[in-house]
Length: 210
Image (cartoon, rainbow, N blue to C red; front, side, top):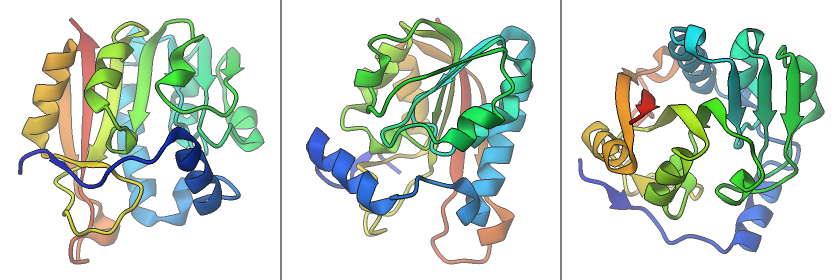
């Protein structure tokens, strides 16, 4: 599966309006069983590197579930999202220090963020107009990167949120080109959707800056 462009991007204003309309009460991962499985598998992967990570940021955090699952290991956590950070995410965070960034989209939301040990990019890269530039920019603000994104999404999937589709080798090449060395990769096929035609599979990556 080669990397393919699924659709043209919206303007920044249209993008913000789109997500405000689609998720008026904020994104919640527990609305979809496969998202619950993915978030848990993502946290399990990050946990294996907990000894090297004392600060982490997720600026497309949705309901904040993933960062909060690992937050007991953190002295500092940073949350942000295009739709803003829900109060429930801030309350659930167990890091010693929590910083929140007002409603803003990547990569603009990186502008005033102090560097962290880990940057979480969970189901976000496929939403970005210039994913290669974002991956390269993240080497300036983090030592480790967690990345998850669908595997080879069909061009006719109809998901209006996604701009890109790619296979595992494509993402591997993108990480290397941007200055990241992959440490671990896992392809998740959620049990809850295993028997559904064209169900999403997810590629999970943990990488370190070269």
